[in-house]
Length: 216
Image (tube, rainbow, N blue to C red):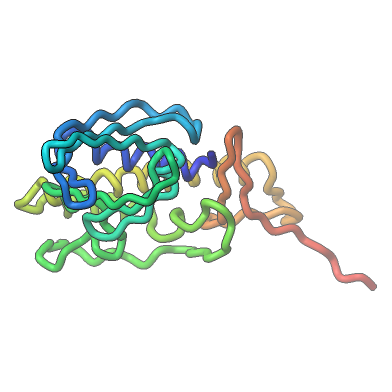
């Protein structure tokens, strides 16, 4: 599994921690158990059990199933351990919230959030989340979400933003390391502050500029 898939699994597992009522194809799950992710696709991390017409059914979800899940508002569509499609619905939290909807209209922000500096839209694997917001912007949104009267509805959004902030800061650290180790005063190699970063298992690729002199 890729680093981004592992992070997605860890984030989605928090939705099965007992704070939510979960429905499987419309039936309320009576038993919900979640185990720790270990980064292996076939590892079973969620067990759900429910009853229909006095008959008991159960569902097992692997890390690969969560990694491939598609979410919209409070509904999650994924495949179980047997590869069968299933729809889950969460009640009690606004379970999956897109970044564009994280800050409702009623949240008052005291100062305008600045434009992201040096935004870079290179389509490198795992780099897209880091350029959506600066760390400062993410902190402002988290602070604003903590003022929402309905803390339950804000909870999932705060978790998502905190993970996004950690992701941004991790990429910032890689950029700083690249500038320190590889950038030169002569300008032969330059690393922008907002360089795209593609994180792997034991390091990262950081976007850089290299000077090529004009041939005479």
